[in-house]
Length: 455
Ligand SMILES: [Zn+2]
Image (cartoon, rainbow, N blue to C red; front, side, top):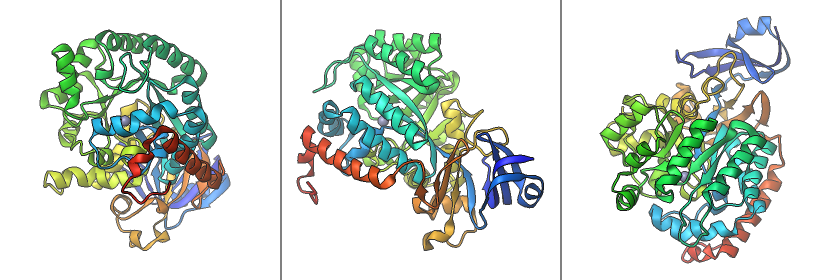
């Protein structure tokens, strides 16, 4: 059999339905897809590949899928901690948004996409808010294309003004989402910010548009108690009741956070097939709380892991998110067996693909699926040695420095920890300059009072 690439003598953690792990495995890639997965010795004998990577001592995992982030926030690392969500929005996020030019958004997205590759992320779902200009959305997609990562973009929608920001037009936002979709395909999703940023009519409009034109939808949901307070005040209904009445609850919906979800609401999600994005680091940074992750998994919800934006993380590091995904619930609920290391890897790969509705193409190392994967090299640092259980080592004893190779669609975008698709040093320089410009022009430099100030 002919192949473009053979990765041999790796431990291959497939994350397929049978949870197969090949102790000494190999994968062959042709035309951007895995065409063979199995025992290394057998595949090496029958496959003739143009390029061969000897991955002895390394572990091959499916590429991680970050189901929720805001790439523009990579310019705000280090400024968001110590504040709860609503305060954080008012003090940091709202002042920054009017100053976010397409150039700054591009620099931010390049930085975030490069950091994602370093942490083994091959797909991400970015969520850009309704108040951004159309050029900002294009800049983010362009950055994703240049880096080569599989980038999905949620086009923010809202019809209610937020403090300090201009009131976005829902119809203009929808027309722009349709424009983006014509240009970039079904990577474009509809993203109402929150239910409380939407009138009932607007929620209904988005629901109908999703149904009629086949859009996926993602929305911040029940992140803090304010979600329900605002909904009850506006309409006498809870947040989830409003979403249900609008027709938005369905398999096309990826609900983000879901910290405050009752048992009945989780059952409603299960009935409607709603998927959930789990953002443990952000939920801890903002003090939002622990989502009922055990119950959601028990009810069979599709759950995907995510970092959230870097203003509430403060990174795009999915390796770090794996560890917190397990330790947050297990520690808070005093149950060391509540979630396992494998559960975290599942939620970052196969589960995340299912949550985004792309599991036929992504999320595991299987013949026929897109060749998205990363190589884990334990020998780079003392932390990851000894390697005895590769899943446990990835989740509990590693850092992104252990990710040595990242591949998207059969293209090696990072090899030996060097980014091949773009000039990383230049991106870091431009992002630092962009962050300093944005922090100065928006006035949020004041937030740095009492910190170790750089500016
Ligand atoms: Zn978010």
